[in-house]
Every structure is written in structure tokens, then in C-alpha cells.
Length: 603
Picture 1: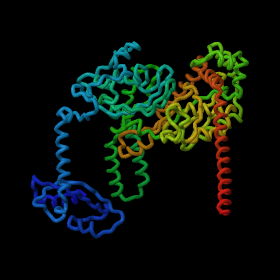
Picture 2: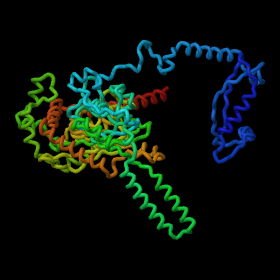
Picture 3: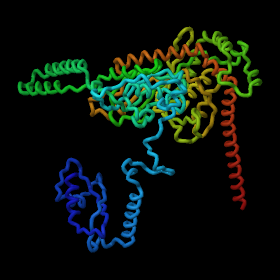
Picture 4: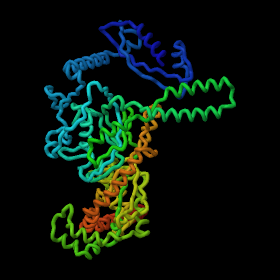
């Protein structure tokens, strides 16, 4: 292709040139199959004679001179076209003159209300970052202590992926938010204190290529949140350790020995060749596991106890955790006592009247029950065990979510019919119940490509209502209809946590670069052991948090307070009324058609 382009350009250079008159020639090159060699002399004959259906064209434009009209084809261009081209070039020149040298140098695009006295790069730090003085005063945070890297220590900028685990009880979600204590702000502060991001980049996440695979809600936990970030590491932290090299050499020797034994029957010359190849391969060992443990521990020293770094891996330069995550798996822990059928009666037995609170209070609080009332209900329901029929109904609802469906009823801000509500769910399954501290819990797992705001919590809410008999199974057809609107509750955030993130597409695309590890934490190793330990810690935290706060009991009272069963009945009645109207309209239309036929026959 390079040879062909060179030949074409040499032909164009023979055209006469005149600065007063120029033409733009549009050239299309037909690229031959890769296995067919075409000399430059036969290239143009191939373009005109070969009628191959699989032709590929490469089109580009070039400006060349034209003297006295050139050839007949050039004379066919009318003067209006020449004038239009000249005007376009003049407009481009004027536009370039208006741009200042500073704008051209910094590649700053002018926007409406642009002020030349202000540099876009000098924006203040984000108000949700601890680089912002107001955040530090509000939460009493200091930027010290900080690791100081000496001038004699060589640092390298590298893109890494962080496998994070956190308990989200004390934070207002993961993503950085103005004047709110978020998990991202804590991680950024730790990166700054560890000397992994420069002071000029502190509070400006775009400067160090920050990206996260998921944005969890307030109170939601995670044991496999993945973030990509460009950090400054010591040179020793990005080189394979001697222990890793020794282990790799041992594995290589084992493979070489097994290969040599299998090829023992071959000729001596072939064996010598194989031996030489083996020796060369062994000496050029390249590690797929870099010694990132030192950097991981250095970062973890500056994090609070409820945020941990399970793993730190080097990645490609264009790695983006947000766009390159293929799938994500969440887990929701459901206490079995939520599946009791008549919760109004359960509350009434403990002296809590839902109707009385409806009459007394115009607006319900976030936690309408007192601690004493929650303690009474908890003692009454903690020994409840789910039945097989309830678990089957629960799994039947979860199976309805599988596949691609519109979930506008399971989030906020989206209307029926909007394509943004479509999501694909690979599976939503229930695991065997487990009893922890006398309370039975039902773990559920959902695996999908991506999820909307509050989507999983709303799906769990509807599944619980169907399993306990507060809603019919047919309500699922209405809730997953792109034209219908159904009101759905939202389950507590305390039972939800991000369990695992998957990057299969990234691992396949970087297969050519064997020096970088795969982002796959399903394989056994130290990182997976830390992941398992933190997942157990999250489960224990969910159980302890329910003991102290009773969030699920508060939720069940709210469900009875707003009487969601009434909303489900209205939604089902609305569909039956529409069917009746359609049947009536169809009957009227058929009667009208019969009358018209009789009238026509009479005429």
C-alpha cells in the first residue's frame, strides 16, 4: 500500500503548479487482496479491469497546482465551484487569525462566555475533594502525614487498576460529591498522601485519568470495585521481583524438560535446535506479575479501616474501568422474616398500628419506628423461617428479570419507552438460606452488563412483595412492559454489595501484551484470598447493622404504611379495563362494519 501511494503521489507531482489557481483532487485507491502482489505498473490496469466484488477503496484528498486550466476534466469545473472553494479557504484563514497564540498552544476550544484572562487548567479543585479547603474544615481532615519521595529516587508514571473493597455505611456513596464524604475522596486523599499523585493534580481527577467501574449508592458496600488511575510509582515497584523471576524460571525449566522428554525420539540436529531455543527463552523471561505488593501496602497505610485495597495491577495506557468492564455481579442479602404474608398483623401484635400512624402523621419520617418498637418486632420475627413455596415464588420472580427488558419502573428519571431503560441481565438466582446469629438470610446474586440507579433494590422490593403474597406474579408483565407505569418500592441499601467485576473483553484485547496481567480475580491467589475475607466481613457487617438499626423492619412498615398492594391492584385493574375497552371498541367496529355492508347492499 505504501508503494502504491508513493507511485500515485509521484504522478500527481508532474502536474503543473501555479500559486494563483489550485485544485483539490479526490483520489480513490483500490486496495488489492493482501496475498496478491501488484507492481506499480499494473496497479491502474487492475483498478479498471478487475471486477472483484470484495473491493476496498481508500479515499483521500490532495491539493495540487493547475496551470491554464489543465486537462479537459479540470476545464469542466465551473467558476462557481472555484469561487466557493476560495471563499471556504478565506473563511478558514480568518478563523485561524482570530484564535490567539495561547489558545492554539493549549488547544483550548472557545465556548460561549469564554474569558481569555482565565486558564481552563487553573480551575479550583472539586468541592467534594479534600483538596478543597471547605471539605477539610467540615470533616476535620489534614493533608499530613505524607510520603515524601526523594530526588534521588526515580519514579515512573504507570496506569494501574485497583481492586477495592469498602463498607459504605459511613459514606454518601462512592462517587465524589460536593461537600459530602465519599469513598472516592478518601482514596484520592490516600493517593496524595502516598505520593502517587502530584500536588498540582490533587482535587482534579481528570488529570490522573481516574475512572471507576461502578457508582454505588449511599450505604452500599463492595468487595470488588475496580478503579483505573495513573499513578507515580518507584522504579523498584514496577519491575518483577527476584523471587518472581526465580519461580518463573523454575516453571520454564519444568516445561522445557517435559518438552525435551517428549521430543527425545527426534534427530540430534533437531534436539540441538530445540535446546538452543529453550535456552534463549529462559534467559529472556518477562514477568506477568509485577511486584506491586509494596505499592499496594503503601497506599493502604493511608486508607481508613473500612476501605481496603485487595490488589493493584498494571494495565495498558488506554485502560478505562468504566467503559471496559463487561459484566458485574451484585449480591443482596434478604432476611427471611420479610417474606411473612401479613405484616400489618405482625406489627399490630406488637402494639404498632399502621392506620393510627397514617392518621396522625401527614409525612412519614425516614425511620418511622422508634428503637423500642423495632426491638419488639425483631424479637417476634427473628425466629421465622421461609417455606419452600415462598422460595419458589421468589425464584420465579427473579427468573422474570433475565434477558433484555425495560426497567423504567425500577429506577427514577426515566419514562416508559425510553431506550436508556433497557438492560441485559444474565441471571438472577437465589442461594440456599443460611442462619446467622439466629436469623435466616437468603443470599441472591444478579449478574448483568450494567444497572440503573436503584434498579437492584427495586427489583428485590417487588420480588419480596410477590413472594409474600402482597402482589400477584402477573404484575411482572406490567412492570416489565415498556408502555406501562407501575409504582415499585425500594429495598434498603444495607443488604446490597458489589461482589465481582469482570473484564473479559479487556483481557482478550491485550492478549498480545503478555507482560501485563489479566484483570481476572477468579483465579486462586493472594488477591482472591483477601477478596474472600473482605466479602465475609461485609456479610457480618450487614447482620450486625440490622441488629442495631433494624433497617429491614423499618422498610416493611413503610411498605404497609403506603399500602403498595393497592398500587399493584390498581395497575392490574388498569390493564383489565384497557382490555375491556379494546374488546368493546372491537365489537363496536365490527357492528359498524356489518351495518355499512347492509347499507351498501341496500343502495
